[in-house]
Structures are given as C-alpha cells and as structure tokens.
Image 1 (cartoon, chains in turn orange, brown):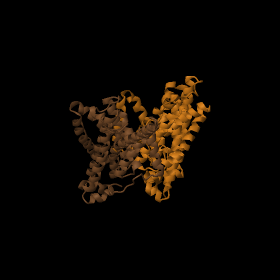
Image 2 (spheres, helix red, strand yellow):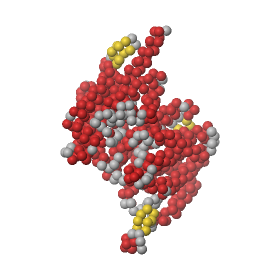
Image 3 (spheres, helix red, strand yellow):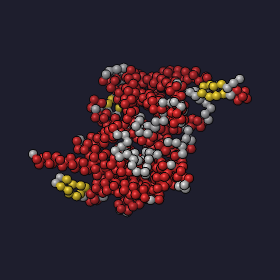
Image 4 (cartoon, chains in turn red, brown):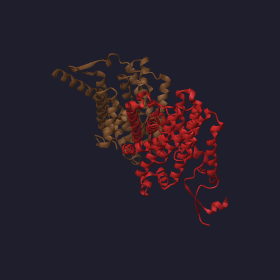
Length: 333
Length: 298
C-alpha cells in the first residue's frame, strides 16, 4: 500500500455533524435563554468574527494592519444609512454594508499597499483616522456626536434582541464557512504558502500581491458585517468609539493568544478574551495593562499561540491542510 | 486697502512660519522612529507613547527639583529604558519574524497609555516653563516668533545634525550602519549586533524624549496623545522619504506647514490638511520628497 494524502482524519470526520449540532443548538437557544444571554452571545460572536477576519488578514495574508477599525466604522455607519435613511430591511442593509466595505477596500488597498511591514500597519491606522475625520464632517451622519439606529424602534426589546441574535448567528456561520471554504480553495493554498514564506510562495507562482488584495477586500467585507452587528446591538454609532484603535488592540490580542495562522486559534482567543474582559472589566485601565502583559509573555514564550500548544498540531477542527500518511506508521497504529 | 492686504499676507506668513517651527517637533519625534526602523527594520508602535511618558516624567521630577533638573534626569533614563527593553524583550522578538516586534511594541503602547492613565489621570497637563513659553521675538509688524517654537525647531535641526555626524563620522555610527546593511556580515567582523540594536533604541527613545518634553511645554497633553504623536512622526518619515535623516526633517517641516495653513483656513482642518498632504505624497511620490541619499540607512 502506498502513501495516502488526506485532509483531516479520524475524529475530524465526525466534526461536520458536531458543528451542525452546535449551529442547531445556537439557533434554538433564543427560545430557552434569557435576553441577557442572547446579548452576551452576540458580543462573543462579534469578537469571534473580528478575530477570524484579522487572522485571515495578518496570519495568512501577512498584512499586519492596525487600521481595520476603518471598515468596522464604515460598516456601522453604512448600516445606519441603508436601514434608516434608505429604509432597507436591516438584514439586507447588513449585506449591503458588507459589500460597501468591500468596495471601499479596493481603492484603499492601492493606497496602503504602497507601504510595507510596520509602516503598512501605521498607514492603515492613519487611513482609519482620516476616514473618521471625514465622517465627523458629514452632518447627515450626526457629525462628532454620532447617530442612532432607528430601524428597530418599532419593535419590542425582546424581539429586537432576538433579531440581532439571529443576524449574528447567520453572519458568524456564513463567515466561518466561507473562511474554511476559502482556505480549502486554490486561493487558500496560496495564502497558506504565503503565511509560511512569502518569497518562496512568490517564486512558486503564487501571485502574492493579487492574493493580498483579494484578502484585504474579503476581510473588509467581514469587518463591515461586524460593524453592522455592533451598530445593531448598540443602537448607536459614535465616531470615537467605532473608529477606536482599541478594536485593533483587542483583535491582535485574541489572535496572538489563540494562535496566528490557524483557523481555530482566533476562535479560542476570542472566547478566552470574552471571559477575561468579563472578569477584569471592573478594574478599569489595569485590565488593558494586564492584557498587554499577557500578550508580550505569549509572543515571547508561545509565539504560535495557545491552540497549537494545546493540540500540538494533531487536531484540526476545520481541516484545511493535507497530510501525508505513510502506510507503515498507519499499520503500527 | 493695501494695508488690509499686507495684514492678510502677514497672517498667512505667520501660519507658515508657525507650521515650519512645529515641523521641528515632528522631525524630533520622527528621527528616532526612522533610526530604529533603519537599523532593525521594525516600527516602534509605542514611539509616541514613550515621548508622552518622558513629558509626564519631567513633570514629576520637576516637582521635586526644577525643570532643567527634570530634563537632565529624564532623558538619560529614557535612553537606558530603550537599551534595557531592547536587550531584554525586543531582541528576543526580533528573531521571531516581522510580526513579533510589532505586537510587542503595540503592547508597550497599550501598557504605557494605561499606566499613565492610572498614575496621572486623563486630565490634560502641560510642562510649566514660566516666562519662557510666552516670550517672543518681534520680526515685523504682526509677525512674532515665539521663543519656545524657535527652540523646538532648533532642537529638531540640532538632533538631525548630531545624528548625521554620529552615523557618518563615529566608530559606533559606522557599526550601526554596518548592522543596518547586513547584520550577519557585521557579526562576522566583530560587531555585537544585540548591543548595536540596544544603542539604536536608546538613541531613538532619547530623541523621542526630547520631542515629548518640548511637545509638553508647547501644548497640553494627556495619556491618549501618544498615538497622535506616532502618527505625526510616521507622516513626517513617509513625506520626507524612508531612511533619509534630512528627508525626515523636511517631512516634519512640510507636515507642520500643511497643518499650520490648514488650521488658518479653519481650525478643524489643521490635522486633516496634514493627512491630505501625506496621502498626496503617498500617491504621487511614494519614495518621499528626499529619498535615501546617504549610506547611513536603507
């Protein structure tokens, strides 16, 4: 018997059913859980969404950005604009605001891609600041004090929260599935190669610049969805909050702690961060100091993050990579 | 009518001159950022926060001694802090690829901001300089140059000149350039790269400290001002051209003038005008106004 090449093995085969079960549970939860838990779940979903998107950008695309709050902000404002001013259904508005973010990302990519490495990081941040400064100038969007979302005002509180919960569930399932399918595609293969070695991937025929641009645009759409969800759950968009660089700090924290360049790691990081902030919230500024210290210690002692550390690269919940299984090793087991 | 015209010209001349002098401050903030990048290829995302840290430290020390004492004490401490952080944390992260140093300096930024917030609260503060802040030199009617802005500008020029001579005409500066060009070859000829990196960060934080202190003398500041200082420094570097010391000075001046003219049009447009010039340079002349000319940095 010759060697076999497989994508995932053993336990991972059962996983699609397992995840279908999780989705089913999440979908039926609103019936049994109180409103408060739905709100909490939405918060966690937003964090998972942010972490997954930032990881796709930085972990696979190699684009370390600290300016993705630009798209969170654009997404949030676009949702309010589409839902309130154009009177679209909020769910369709979410879809449109994601697409709008993707469209904005195309010209912006030509601008920020002129910078590399660390300067790219600050460049994206400056772009986010500029977009904020322009947004503040638009009086139709509420200027410096922000704008409230009125689309849900006819609904009762419970119905509204359930609606937001449902949007969050649908968004997170769609985004996670697309991410997995993307990573299993030709593009994903190229991105994985870029993650491991940029130059080598280029030499082997991966169109690095083009792939980066595609990732930048796709990820911008994801951030647009996240921004829409944030606007829907807060019911208000304020420029200083929605364009805050703290989003970048949180995303970097989640991804680095969980495991950069893996699909499962950022999800783990997001869940860990959710509980950490829940615990440390009352400590004010100390909470961010502690997060900063944890991040530094993690980067220096477990640079690959917690997920690979825990699983030792043996378990893959979302199998995207191929492995060679040699018959001898298989037989021995 | 002619008198009114003259007055208008003076108003704009004044805006340009003030902007030019402010440019020296941006150059001070930017030169350290540029040097650290030039030697190690890492961008210190906490650069602005370190300068704000220095400004706060001067306030604290000056309470017990005086302003000069504060400056004389704080600046060497900044350099030592830079050397220490580089030798302990940053050097370790340098070996782990491009991402780790970025993450660590970003974490520094978050930590410094929040420690300052805990210690000094979010209230605006400024470094009190007494008469020094309000004195000015009269050049013409309606045109005065403040002593403090002038000193700021001169400090920017002097630091640039010092760095130029240090990099080009000293033993240590040559070692810095060698490490910048090729760390492995530098190691082969007996240069201790880890020490050199420490020196680069020490100089970087020293100049960031000067910038922060002058910034704190000129305007009110709060713990959250670090990122703004970083953004201005970064724009000065990009406008001037990566890796060029004199370009960085020019970039700072161009940014300062853009902001000065912008806020003369309308106060809210100052920062926006600076950003727009930055974007324009990035689109039209991505290599910067004065691309690398000297062998010092790449």
